Amino acid sequence: MGPVGPGGPAPLAPAKNTFGLVSLIVGAVAFVGAFIPIINYVSGFAAIAGLVFGIIAVTRKGKPKGLAKGGIAASGVALLLSIVLAIVYTVGFVAAVHDAQGLKSGSSSDTSGDSLTDPTEVPSNEGDVGTRTNPAPIGTTIATTADGQPEYEITLGAPTLNADAIIAAENQFNDAAPAGMQYAMVPITVTYQGAKTGTPWMDLDVSFVSAAGTTHSENDSSVVGPAPLSDIHELYPAGTATGNVVIAIPTADAATGTWVISQSFSDEKFYSAAQ
Image 1 (spheres, one colour):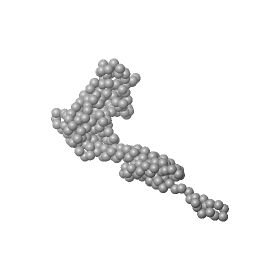
Image 2: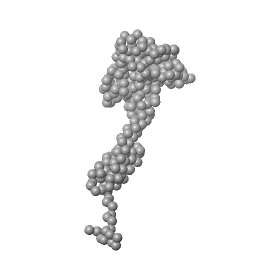
Image 3: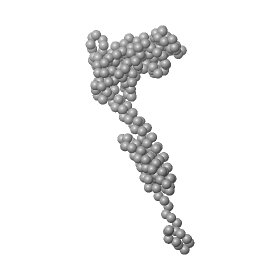
Image 4: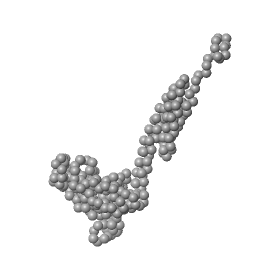
């Protein structure tokens, strides 16, 4: 029994819940760390610890729950942010690395064997071969790199700029091209030159830029074409395969547009003549 004062028994000291306080502090630290690159890889583990302390705190009988509930909330939010921001930062880093790699032009498939880097092939007022103002001819081989090492050799074959009949015959459920548009199909031969494995439809993007400057891709329409590039599975070193890309392009001045090849997560582009 506590000491008795003139006015009756002295009030008991308020109960404390140390685990709840620890949970709140750890959760707050993890929340801040979630926004800091690299550190947010660790903050997720701190958030998990905060959740554990919070759960222990709310299960203790006779102890206040306020701090514990706050700690659980802070730790849960911190864990979610740590995961999401770690993914965002990682994707941003990978994109930056790919931007630094870029695309470089390789040898032409023309029987003359001349390289695109031969200055005699590039008019001084036109810039480098492979730009939109000076697109490379069909049949040019493009060499890409990843982490400074060879990754793919890519060659565009002879396109069919009006492949409407081919697409209609390929699948009865294929929709007709929208008004003012037509399906264009280009065969693409890829050779994996890396040390591990590559999946072309994931690693490469193919699009078409019209004469009017509008960009069009496979995702603009859902049609089934013959032997699509997406059917090419994982390639091992020196593995090669050919697949078709089908894109709905504007009918007007179709022959003066350009095919565009780029690596996923990269702003570097290589332009090739429409035909």
